[in-house]
Image 1 (cartoon, rainbow, N blue to C red):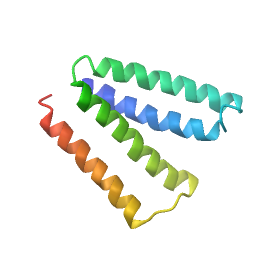
Image 2: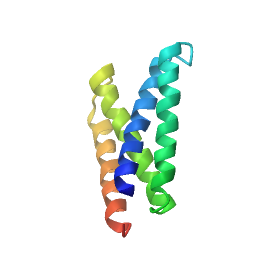
Image 3: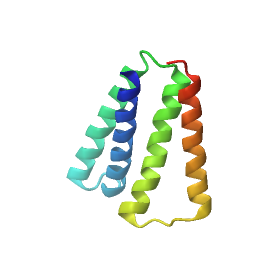
Image 4: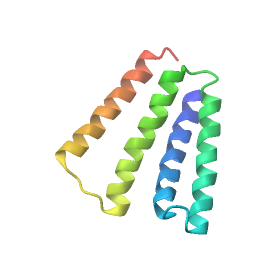
Length: 106
């Protein structure tokens, strides 16, 4: 269950990162509210997952999901550049996340 909570927390991290971009520095009300609510949800679920998972693993996976998710969101929804170096770097993050999951013992 803790891995599911952590995965959802990571998805919420992507959501609040996207909200942060669209809030334009917290100058737009509803995107700002969305950002705050999804950030709070992400932190709460991360904290719940950390009851069972090691700190380093949970935090790295959470930030990795957020980083790769935001990377994909930026490409798909915001027209950000797709280059071999950017994609290769994202793949390395995913490989690291898989390694952490497989070696965590949970």
